[in-house]
Length: 406
Image (cartoon, rainbow, N blue to C red; front, side, top):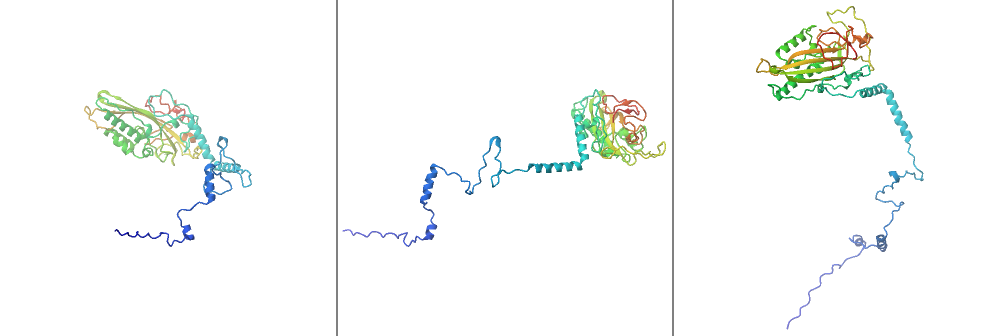
């Protein structure tokens, strides 16, 4: 018969020796909620609790409700009274600071005001695109200063610097391709900039870069005029330069108005026409008004009192208009230097310049203002002309006319 075996032994009790002390209770992972907690949890499921303003909360307070038109309720102090913002004190402080600054800078504020009036008197204009048919509009006369050298002048609305010298779009002409014409126009523009706008040239230095652009004959003539200027051969007829001992530019800015055109010259090649007016602002140099060595002064030089502007500096403008034609010959028909400039015609008018030329420099006429005469009255009593009127042709004849405005 089979033998009944004993059942396997029971495993050890896991809770045998377990002590339910205070440390065991505190370390338990799950804690039983109290009766009050279970009651409140059941109640809040049906009716969420309302915030209590007196009870501190770790969450930030929600923004105060806005009134109509989006304005917030006025703040109150701990006693329930509305807090008043002292805006008047802040306003008084700002006004006092503004009045103090205005008193310290009254001259500058006056200049800003006048500059605003002046800038609004004439709208800005760009470079010419066609020959003008009338003179620029009249501007209320004003005394130029270092800060406002174009005050009371039509040039205030003109463009300035090299950006004002704009050449037309190139196209093929005769034997010259479009690219070749574009290169010739760029060379003409570079020459105009170097001879009339380059600060070094205007300050009286030798324009070496401009000389390098001319053909052999033109370069030789200009070099001779620079070395030995005479009334018949004055480099001022070629380029704008001032003797720094007599006239000093108040700024590198030069106002410019004019245009460049080109056309075919038949078998002779390409002809480029330029007609530009340059306006310079200058102050007297240390030797302004003194006779040049070897020149007749008509008597001893007398002390003079310059008519100064608002900034205490006397400023004059000189208006130079130049018409120049450049020809590029067909290299297959003529012995020429490729790419070099040949000036075939040149005419100029120099507004507010002394009548006698030959010093090698433009001679701004400071004497007329210092002697207290009318700036528009020329010393020779010649015809009265408007130096800003670009609608009139230049005859190229030497003369000394009166000016209707400067």
